[in-house]
Length: 192
Image (tube, rainbow, N blue to C red; front, side):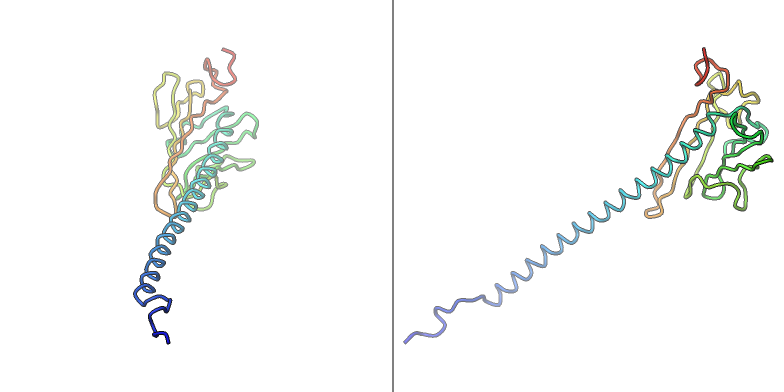
């Protein structure tokens, strides 16, 4: 006759609890790693979207302002530029900030005002927290208003800051545009 209990195989209650706790700790660590991975992915995807939108807006502004033939120096400043283009109609166009967006305003048959209250112009970029224009004259001086003559304009510096909706952080972007119709030596489109 065998004695009961001596050769029985199995787990004790303490061993079972230890295994359950160990599996729980490993699951918690893996869960946190997965959550961090998803957060990183979403953050990176949002960065890409913001960068693409900003680059598209800056590229459109570059195309517009590279071809200017005249600037309305009276109504242009560090928040809005009124200009005419060589290939477009004879009316003034504008690029400026309205509320939290940068807009371009083109009105066929009449001069466009700078964006203000109301929905004026086409949206270039939204969630903009700051938008600044600076004008570099032919002497290299940085101005908040454009020079009276286009011939005295060397470059237009545009800086904008976009707010991230998900974290409240901001991303900054900038471009320097050299209009080609200024007649300055070494300007795009000049022969000198």
